[in-house]
Length: 507
Image (cartoon, rainbow, N blue to C red; front, side, top):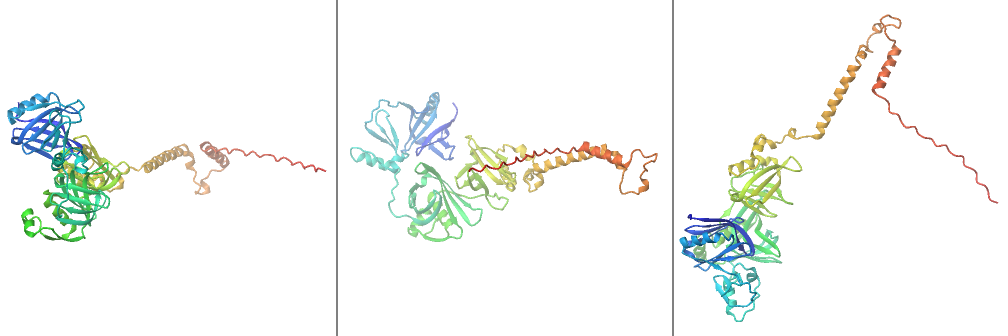
């Protein structure tokens, strides 16, 4: 048995959605990395207290409990994986992998037991409710139990956000592109509250994956993007990104609802009680301090126009593609973030409607393809050099390098194929060949030049004269008649008018 065990295509549930990833067991820790978001869950080996092997909908699953009260569930194992996982746990973690049978008797009653944030029946496993992940608990609690102890346990373990106390600061009427509208954003110590005319959202800081600050191509606006996992919901629509749009000219003076000593103690100099400056800088500075995440900005890439983004279209909407140091992000509808580590290959393809643009295709390791179309061909050289420098696999590298490098998308119209011009050239060649054949057939006519003197013309009864002028004219006319036969016009049929008989008068 080796020092590590690794499994691919392992699934975990996050707020009602399934994410697949890779799970690795080592002597020091258990690490799970999501393919979708890149988020890493790490469990130190000394904290692992219990492990269960159970049958799930697809294959088998493992339930892991830690001494800190957290519970982790991973599904997608095969039946043959039990023996090697059980032996690895005994040898390295000193934990027995117990088999847990699911109850299929149909009972709907029993004694509830709370293990960390999971509620289950005490004896046989009838159902398990992860209170932190369950949306019905966090959004609308509708349970009936005898006594208040059960309700108190549920509310204490569930991810129920209650806006108690004063907000650290409030930003009024911020323009939000996703979800669309204007919202008042209230900043609390542990969560973010978006209050709009129709919808309210409460976003825990633990669900924020990344922060992006992106300049618009017009150099007058800024995008502030918040990546979320799990996403926020509006009906059946899930929003994985929160996108705010700011004007660079908009200024703000902000005073935090805290004392200076408390601000210094809690945020360690990242914030000050009184701040002033551009609105986008104040918002990004506050979010960075409270969420404790770095803000990603565009790197050294510069497009043909000098901007740090590329104008393109994704699906049916036009937007901006930003090449970053570790990935690509597209804003804004729908937002897409692709990390380099999840990209299998990229492809440069000519535009389907015109040669003045090209398409940039990205294929992920999960066999998902994203096509960004209608990119100006002047951007090809910059984008190709960027992708090549990041050592991404270019699918059609040999084809593109044989197209004069970046000059394959030059501005010259001579490289473009003009079908009409080619057809006219072919017709001109055919006409020239036809004229040459006429001249070869009528070489005898070249001896007659009408502009010369009459002495050179042979006389009618001269011995040198072979044919008379009239006969030559007739011969010429016959030759022309052979060359071009006049089209026969259809004769018009003239109908004879019938004489109109006079009417007989009736007496």
